Length: 129
Image (cartoon, rainbow, N blue to C red; front, side, top):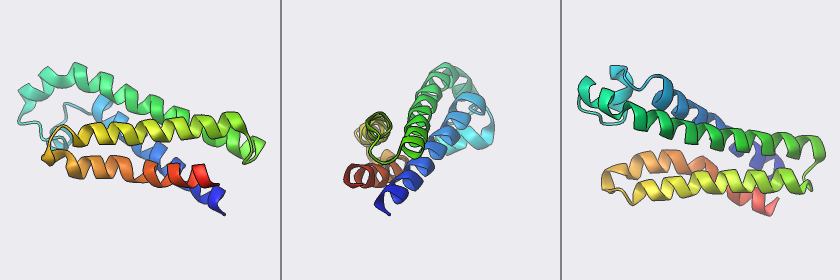
């Protein structure tokens, strides 16, 4: 049961990071998106677009790592070392990124909580599964 919950939370974390990728790398200059990230205006969104584009791909790569770990775990079973290791590494990296975001200032506590809660739960469950 713990293994299944770990996979569910890992999958949700991966989906969240794909969504963040879409926001940062695909929709960054759309007003609805840059307002989510506290960007003041279209000019600022245009200036920060290359940084956001790059950052979005980091989120995508973390999601892909988690997804591959999930697939290996499901196909080869809970004892699969490769799947479990990749899943724990990906979730740990997602959590670490959220912790780094917290160090950027108090205004980032909420986004970091959103970004880090699912990976934290998935990581703990994956470790104890």
